[in-house]
Amino acid sequence: MSTTVAAPTRTLRPDDIFFPAMAVLILVIVVTGFGQSYFLAGMIRAKLPNALVHIHGAIFTTWIFFFLFQTSLVAAHRVKLHMALGIVGVILPPVMLILGVLTLMDSIRRAQLDIPPELILVGDLENLLLSSSSQRGHYLPAATPPPTSAF
Image 1 (cartoon, rainbow, N blue to C red):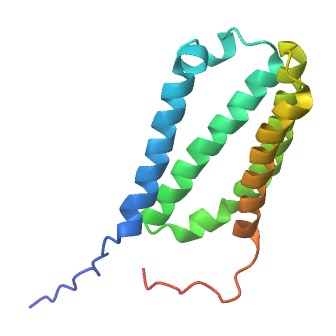
Image 2: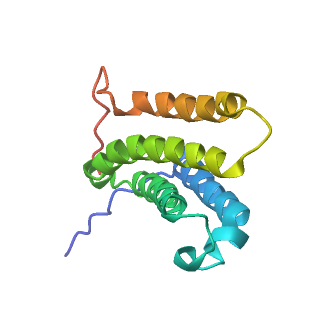
């Protein structure tokens, strides 16, 4: 007589659906917004002002795919791999901030608008700094370690 042991069932949490779905939604919004000028134009062959804008687009697109990948890893209960790859999540935001500021300055330089550059910087630079400071908290060690799972 043989005895079979049932594998433990994994319960699907609302977070396992919500965060990957939001990552897919962000990806769809980005591809829709930049489709004509960047993605459908062949990324590398797209007619953009200079190499800085190409690098900016590539790094920011990498961030979106990384976000989707990380949320999917957690949803699949692959938390150890998620944490191991977390170093990329520490490196990308400062690079994004620097590229965002450089691309913004380059855009202002090329536009030659009648609006003073300081007024343009107020809104755009403020958004860059606020989004980068909100990311900072995700990289600090937790006060208490996260609960471990039997899976």
